[in-house]
Image (cartoon, rainbow, N blue to C red; front, side, top):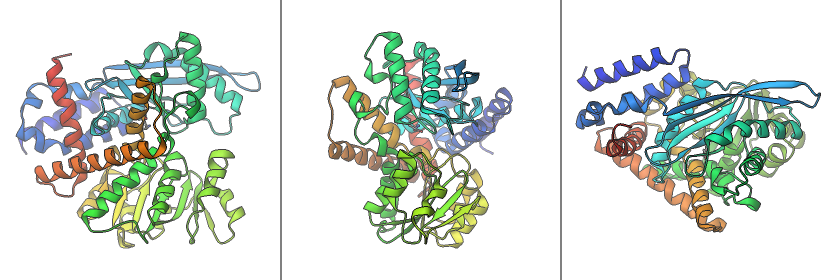
Length: 448
Ligand code: GLU
């Protein structure tokens, strides 16, 4: 075992001891630390300056009470989080997740990933993440508003356009950002557009932000496919999830000539051999906020499978776009057996580590989340740019900027994986490229 591997092992064990019962955070740290060993062997300065010990420790962790009153007049209490992980490259930047599974370990894994993802975009953004264990399912619009207002009543003192800039994630979309921005404006008496991204177009949002994560993930896969002289044209694809990321992944894949035959939610999947009807999907999920099951009411030849495993559906391209650890090694085996050629992670850490290893070993093109789904936060960066200059770019111009950023990220992953002797291993490529920029900035800034 090399000296660098030994040190990484010690640091990882220390992280596990110091952050007990946070398996998702351990998983994210393990993946990054062990994959950057080739860099640490080449440049011992990162170990000497204790960059790893510093980078795994969030700069600040805020945990707070979120009391609110439901429609029955009863008091409810949730827990709010904002983990300000690293600000070497810019203000903390990252989404807010509202989901019943949220606890410190989830927010820390997401915040840690965000550091390297944001670095890969090439924009000046540090890494952070936040959220709450609030479950938005089944809540009325008024309940959502009261919750968002209470959440912001504490969060506002920690954020700012030059300090920390939250956005959306699972359970937080345009509606929630609107309520939170309204409350921030009211409390601070400042129209500080750059304090949140993912805003509505009427009050400082950017065109393409809604589509950005899904479009970006598809652009990333398009670049990977070029390596094998392939395109989306005529390919059968499966996209898990049916939220914002999944919907716009389906849209872009269809524009590029591929066919998405299945999408899902936490109850089951729907399979439509003719290709998913995008307009219906948008109507059900974005307008009516319904479950995916209702798709079959409109398309009789589509099938809905309650608790079904979407990865059993044969496809050439898989885009896991629901949530962490949704695709395990057994799923990976099935997908490979069915002729899979590429995977693009639209969600954060959707594939388990052994599934990732298997994909790479089998020669499947694998786009890791922190590279493949960076289009969302990259377009948040473009939204901040427009807010700072008080301008509004048109759709095509903004989409071209997004596309260029995704192409650059792919090139960084490819060149770095080649340079360190791991050709076509974009996990190594993304982690080393993302880490190096942050680590070099941390060296420049001194011990802070
Ligand atoms: N939640 C998204 C992510 O995982 C977007 C974050 C942002 O736009 O700040 O990257």
